[in-house]
Image (cartoon, rainbow, N blue to C red):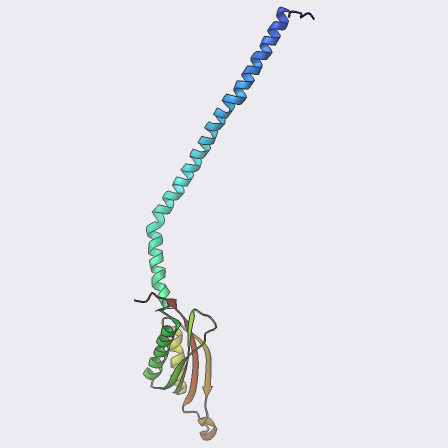
Length: 186
């Protein structure tokens, strides 16, 4: 077999093709990943700058958020009194209703805990003897006093009205509930 030698023009073409192959190899294997790395790091720096500015805004907002949280914590007492358990919250609610009834001049006849449909609420049933005006005032006071409570049931009996034709005193049974916030026992 004989090998034929290349003409100078063919040798130049082969050398040029080899040079182009080496340049393409250098571009795809070395230069392109290097440029891609620079671009990725530039994008990452931009992402870090955005994250930094967002974090700076969050850090600057901490005092404002703390003041808001403290204000909400103070308002929470209007809706959720602190009590270690439902029995203590129920006792406080019963005492509150008893005090309100007696302050209006009514006759407090008794109170008891009742089961609440919601586990995070204390519920009580109180019975009393009140006039119509006292009952209206009791309901108005209960509606506006803090911590807010829910009157779930109100039963009014006026047995004397059948005999005298006029109800001077009403037998009242009130079921009330109040949500509470479990407080740590001290």
